Length: 404
Image (cartoon, rainbow, N blue to C red; front, side):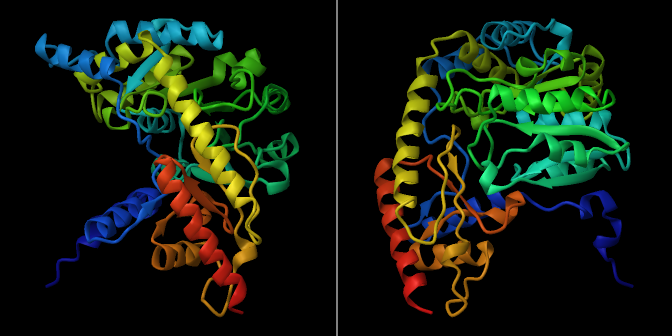
């Protein structure tokens, strides 16, 4: 008698796949440990250290004995700081019962999907998309509806596309600006156009993933869907966190703000899966939001400098098309012009493998983000690494063009 453990796995878990970005980064780390001179341009994680005043706040919290359970939705002081942040930076007014602190922005999004998506409800996700949106939809027994955007439109969802994708089953529209993986941000007018469509469909909830809000340089100020269309306030959930802006990825603190009824449902989900976010990490996040914001500007300026170099170099390589990013720390070039059947590079997956094997460069193929024919380059590494990385990519590109 055989004991096939696969028989005990749920259909839900069989529908999803592990995060490809984490898998590629792990492989790059293994190669580095084996002595290979890998330059890892795959991981979406700030290379800066968490600022000292934030670390000290966590240490103080531990020394002060703040190591017990907290309220499921976060300590009151942190929730108030989040309310103040929204009012100060986004001109959005929330009450404490409209805010939920979670174990990262990813957790916030999952809480939302689990709280409002019923079987066969549809979630509209513009592609390219962050890798986890479709799988979290599937975990909630929903149906991802992928809407492909165009390079010519700078990968932005058009209002006509949104209207065409909406059905009677649409439950959520997912927006991410600035975007992972493209680095592209919607303007206020572009968001207004999308908002006009959404106003005509009152059952739809809008999820705005603003995690890269502070990593924006091409516009005078950040705007989200509620800044563009305040009428959507009663059915929009704004998701953010401290991971990217404050180099706090491992601290796992994200938050969501929205209608009290939805936030209460998300809190109920969280109460049964994680309970409260880590106590001392909450005090660190409090220090981040209330402290000196110069560290945010310093990191953003560094990413902008790196972006300008990387994009400038890519734009000189025949076979690569690359538009400048508006923010984040990603660029998303098209590499279809470098395909080479002789060398076995006929898609973005094979290009990623070729770069890893031939140039010791780790990137993420665009297929992981629903956009074949592209690669995501992450510049959260030193300028020295980026200079060497671009040299290696140029060399590989020359080889792909010569050998036919």
